[in-house]
Image (cartoon, rainbow, N blue to C red):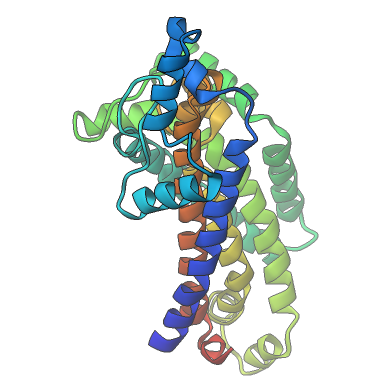
Length: 315
């Protein structure tokens, strides 16, 4: 197990290095001169522009700029926001817990809805339950997040008055109010992913239930519940683990539209504001953190593969 984990960790290092080069390179293609943005009303003064370029290392060759930026990243220094003049690492540290809470809540909702629906749909194939589950899954995939969010606000906030329509309260201040402000956006995000989980779980379970080892288990007289949950489900979960890692990475990278609708100050709102204000270092920092999260989640998925199916340890 340790050898398997060491190989996977070794494979992530070149990936992260390539991602850092890609992120830094793409930023250079963005329009506009950072020095002109920062100079403001003094953009016509060549001395001011030269001073800003020297402070930001923009007067150095690109390889040197990349090396200095990478050195800062490795030491936890992602640079400074051009707009609010604060360290980017501090800004991300403020926004990341918000997105973590929202993303994890949405992920749990998706698992609680999608996995059982997929199992029941496969076990009751071609029955009204299967047709209903597929219809719900298709609706979850088709409904736009912003529309569903607005409808939930109209129902639970405007008509019933049960939940606040927008805003965010940290868990550390009031956990009840925090859950009240995040349950609707979490459901909006989780409903679409639940539909994806349901369809993949159904497909994987149908394939597993058709295998010889399942027929053998049934021939031995095992209860159907044991056959489905102990034998078929364990193998059907392997492809779903990959999907789960990717979807969780998407949630943690920030759901732009949902956070805008509910005024949630997370990663999605942060990167939208940074793009509109041309605060490119913040965009670069958020994208880098998002890429690292994706790589780490894929590493976790590889470990879960081994725990679910020990035969993969020697792969």
